Image 1 (cartoon, rainbow, N blue to C red):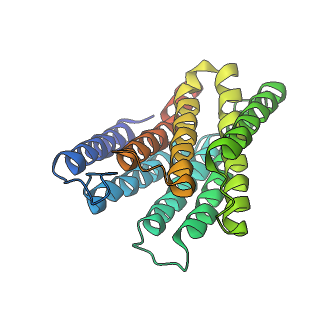
Image 2: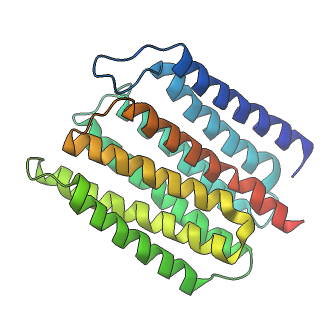
Image 3: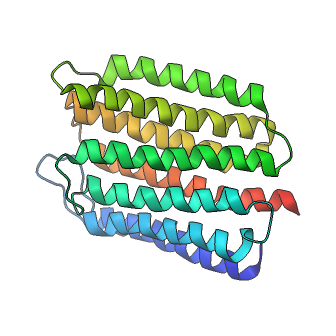
Length: 243
């Protein structure tokens, strides 16, 4: 990875970290007490990570065997930014939760494609490890959904949409862990996917079970954005494997 890529992505990562910190320090608790962050400043950090993902692709990965993997990560992060705007109701939809589920699911499909493309670029798809980890994560997600998310009071599209979403998220997380077990250098990808999983698990419990404990919104966001950063910076880990 060249110096220009390192400089730009490091600057964007540092700016995202600082912006998240300032969003919390300078914000005030909302009426429910679930968050104190400044919403627009917080959401801007998702855009910064999308820009970092495109910098990795355009400035370093494009002429390498990792081009397709890096492009899929950039697309996934960009789609996630759009989903963040939907969940924040900056982009208006008839139902923000359904809209967020659908758009985030597209992002997870991009990340699933990225893990498969990365395995191919590295010369071997560790099928057993990836399938075993994916099965474990999907099973865990389904059990969690039944115990802590599912609500008979929710409309059927939301109930089954949330289950389908957790399945997609479980597949993405499991495939990432299958890669990291095979190639430990890829731990940022696995850790990032796991944090994303944890964030959405907490969010599902908050939305469907109305479990609005103090600071839950900030916990959801921070685990999410740190997870996304891990996925984006998996570019650097993967490129280091080509040296």
